[in-house]
Image (cartoon, rainbow, N blue to C red):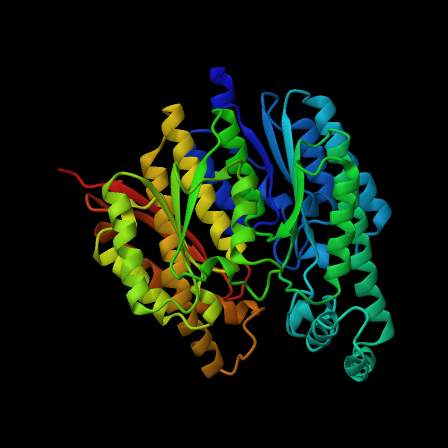
Length: 506
């Protein structure tokens, strides 16, 4: 393996500018000792404001590092301007079609680079925002987005007992808006089919089409089937998959590029907290946990291997009782003490109550396990959570094998996840939402600046205190050196955290 393959930059076009999609892939590169280079943040848009696909294409053509050996590209950003922009009918198919040609252009300019791409099948609900301020003119603002979501979750076509509901919802939505929504879905499927053809033509080496937030029933079912049929007919079925997920796909493909750079196929064992864990399913995804997890392991370049693993992935599933929690923690502690690489994914957020999740996280901290994990993740869909944990542990494994491992960057990634996934979502976010509601703001999906500013300060203060308190407990010998926190999309669904650690002076 040439040394240049270990340190050559990875070109990365993110799904949008959220920390989980933009910053975490860069942090993976720091852990492994390999730079991940993105377009300027100003080109990526912000929430309801789309990114600038044409400027990003210009950046790819003129400013992407010439020595790049890998590229990981979101086609939603490349064609529409990001995930939220992909849910609205603003971009015509013709424009998206021509923008997709940028993949072939990049391939021609970088013939030795491995190009990976990720796309999404539109989720059933449009982006939900209240009809206030600038959001009032956004596509299908409240209450229309809720009617569209209800309509899209019916069978396609509606069952006889659903026909009355479907007719009522169509009337509430209005024909022009409903047709615009359906046209946007059809456009997205047509663009995703171009990606399948690009893989078959060897323009793209590996691709994944993720089904964003949708269960087993709805308008997406035929779309997924169409794409799966295309994959089979393309003959490139081993190099393109259709699977649940969205936000984690970029991280998974960056992890795959990192592993490929050192010639490593990670072997991952999966241990569930309950005997039926593998068969449970996220209601926002169309496959059981075992299928989603095995697909993600493969997407990251790995293979499931319960007998001789490089990494042990522990998965805490809903309805885990105290007895099984104790057994899970004992097993994790034993593996950590044996210096095995241990990744942890807590999927109990699906229960919609966070007390048990917070308790288990506190047990990991109290027993000195949290800071010794290779990865921690516990928020959002099971694909998001597992994909994040797998990507982190693979980045660390790559760095160790390449002797470019950055232990401090690894600790900061884990600390970021504990602060975000646990502290923010189980403690701080409920407080922010309660504070907003007490002040007459019931919709927390889009906050006007005068409302967002004080709530963002409250968020920052609480997270800063938690970071200052937890840093030396989770990572003995280290302290919090710098900290900032934001609400990057002026809503309470996610936070942005920059927590820097430094060794204590002896």
